[in-house]
Image (cartoon, rainbow, N blue to C red; front, top):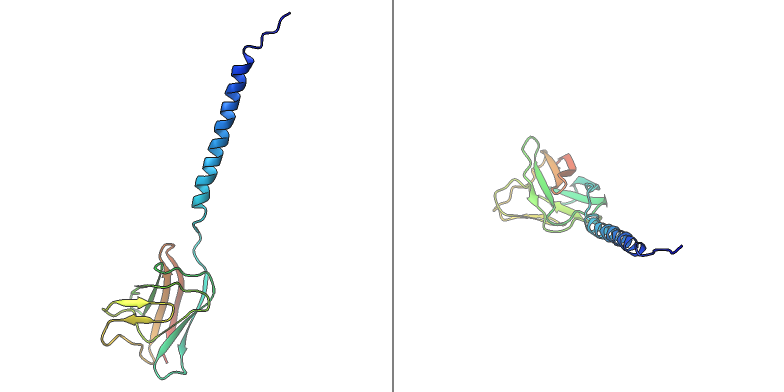
Length: 158
């Protein structure tokens, strides 16, 4: 008997083409999903403390980033308002890293332009709205891309 091998070649060709297509699709999917995996999907966690500074002449608060994730410039906002008032958030202009501290005498509820940095809260209000001794203030930091409140506390100004 004589063997006929003519049909083997096209079948092997089709199998190889399917295998190459599957491998290419897998590699492309891995690359595409790899790019989106770099974006954090969990809200940042931070240990941020607020305290009234008593060893200075004026009335000021110290907001200290004592641990956790870095807050990225432009993504976190700060509000310092008297208790009972709606929060008024001001955009940040610097990153807020572990060890950084904001020392401020200003509220964020004035009408001027505000600059919130990792060191202070500045405003063009003349005179700026300042903390008053004996009053309670609500201090809040929110990270807007995640709608995450990383600080919400009430503190008494001394």
